[in-house]
Length: 363
Image (cartoon, rainbow, N blue to C red; front, side, top):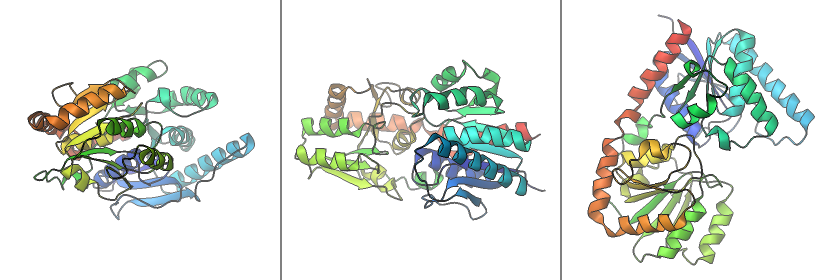
């Protein structure tokens, strides 16, 4: 039986939450569909992909655009390229991930006469975009066949201009390759954070909290890279905790850190859906997360399978870190409860929801 042809559209396949979700979904859906990933910019592929997945690049490496004329020209060029790819590859459904690809996907799909799904990955209220881009999104998103989001809070935001029947909540899947490596038999005194080093993730609050606690026999490990790297290195040096804090940069396999850590600290100011927090809970870490919009409160029942603290509240973070660091039975109890709540994020469950959505649109 001939497979239907679907395509994901995303800026890159570098390390990142949205990129990880696309790679995981594509690897699962390629069994049922002929899958293409259309990538806007050429860059290294961070995630392992099934060799049957077709990768097509729209342009060269990303370069910043500083003029309105250049920006408009660039957008039009991408849309024309995507339309050409859709037609030459006989793609029946285009799936956008992240705001700019979503806008491209709506226009290119309508022009090509194919169906479209768009998917927001960060809470739209906090997306870094101009007023013009917000307006474009507001006017174009309703033309997509379906908007996929991860939380009710995000659905409520979009309900102001998108019909409820055109939205669907589908959670992010756990990476099968990662979860196959769970081995929590040996734990060390490690507080772990995984994420991009930037304003959104707010790791500087975690670094300061750890410094204030100044534990003798604990380490703080932050896995990830980003534009705040130099600032965080400087902050760690100023606080004189270079022997206790490790910035690993991006790592291909984060399972080793999940396996050996005891506590996970998630300090974001805002999210779409916190992939790293889901992974940490699957690995049985006792987690502390800011109750930011949106995601952590959908995962954590405060005091049962983790702790929720107010966003940007360093004092509350220090209090919960001290509590978990000093109480091993509480850590184990919360970690086990967290592990038991993560089956719904396994790829077989999430992939089935995507297949049902795709089939409904194509049939």
